[in-house]
Length: 330
Image (cartoon, rainbow, N blue to C red; front, side, top):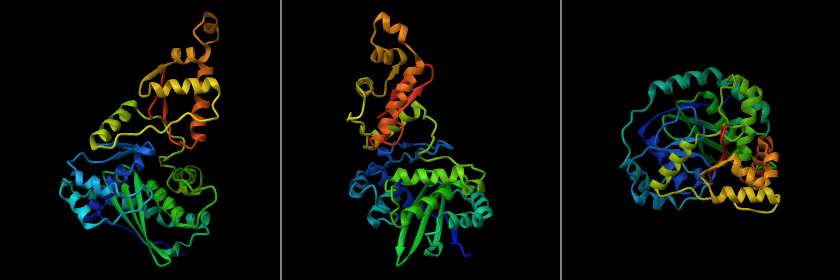
């Protein structure tokens, strides 16, 4: 069968558009609300770290970008906005060698990938894609995507960060296809679509094509370093977009769970030790010492984490500090 044409292209113009897009996503809070880490440097092989270069962005840029909403798939911005980015971009050369390597790895897998897509998503006609243009770049997200609808067909635009391999490009293409398909029942939210692509890339024949060399976006993620979280919060504050709290106490928590969660919220970004949680759980009487049990504390925290997600906050907010306790980063 005929497959979409995949074109690798790296130009200063594409890079400028992409950096503008990243700035827009920060301005509208898209990354912050989903608890991605916006950082002024590259953290290799970390799918939740977004490298946003630390250069002097004009205030007028942020004022213009704040007019956009988080769900807009914008790639081509007005010239007056793009010029603001062009005026401050530092000239890192296009990463041609890494881009060529990535292109070569992708081309070896391309036909198998699209054959599997046709099998797993038979309701989507691959002939609807005019082309897929790919920008290999050293900054930004693991992979981003944009599309333009041209009649009944689509132009797809993708980025892939060069510290990752072709599996991450496959994931962004899959996710983009899901966004362009007719609404899928129970798959209306961003993280739900991401969870489906995570599943396909880690358990199906599609993932097998790439030897499962893939980092998930939302599913089964390892805990983040608290130093990285603090660095991201500092950088976002410097840019003028501090992270906003998203947890609120609602119905569904037991009295003990509510008491513990309220304590975490009141002491966010601080280590809460096992002993402190034990006092909230059993009290601090002598009898409570006999009841103290790390397994019970772990079970309690697991239930709280699950209920936070059940209330629509999918990203991990409570992190384990091994051998000490837990920290809430909200």
